[in-house]
Image 1 (tube, rainbow, N blue to C red):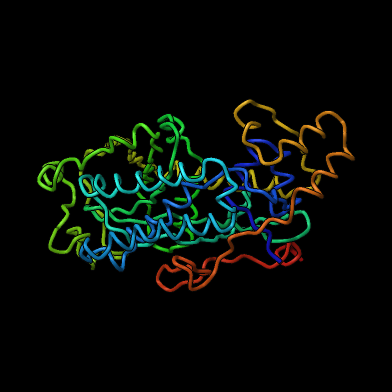
Image 2 (cartoon, rainbow, N blue to C red; image 1 turned 90 degrees about the vertical axis):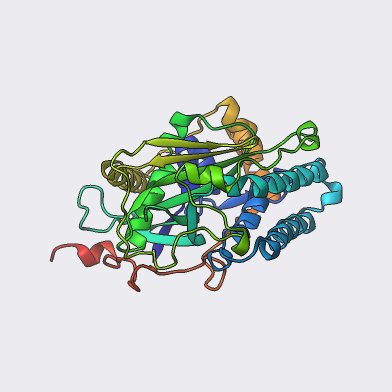
Length: 386
């Protein structure tokens, strides 16, 4: 058997162990029966961008691609509306209008700053975690299950220097502080995990593609397209070719076996800015990536160990949007029976978006040189010395 650890579980463990205990797959594995947010704009926009950045259509005419992108957003909104009953959900229509305005503005802005060619989109990865004290051995839970880390990359892309990047698309209310992006443990861990999953590929860093949700007033004055391809060329980027629409001048042969030929002077952080957009390039050093893997394994050992301490970490920012605020408050006040009653009546077993072969980006083995991801022994007893 395998014990799975996801970025969401890890984030919950760091943020509040009670939230982690109630929601993590390996713990209570609960989710609220009713949606907390009126509409997941972030998910809907990322569904649309998965079509926009789909590698197989990257050189297609924009006349063909852009209608498909907008349809992907419409389908995502309709899907959520059907699941939630949009007519009974306050704010749904307004947020849907914001999502559509945001996507339209992004499609006008992105070609002016594009310096990437997508290689994979919405791709799953899953890797074995090593023992932090004995990296040559696998990490096992207290019950003997092998611990594996599973995540999903919004996009893996290559730049004009044949360097590979992991791209994260996020809809935000406010820009994330730069130091928070630099110290983003999930992003650094994704670099470490991807290099173990896709054997032979080295990740140069992470790109945080933030899209700020516009207000109703801002939607009335949507930003126009920015600089053209000529300006992009002056900055050393990859131009957009109207003849082939989404085509960027990165030859298709540039893939795994190409050696990066980057400039001698590399900036740690680079920004591309737009009215509602900010794209932050952050280079990750080799020690930083290795440290991210070690920290991930260290935390996983505690999470899956015997007698892990579970306690709340109350804060105004975390508790305001926590899906378990009501039962947590009851537990905090010592009303344990009431808390269990709320959990029974208002929560259900969580439905996970597991790896589905055939789904866009869905794979369950390494795609690097055809190799399967490294697997350690099956149980703690299997690797114990005789």
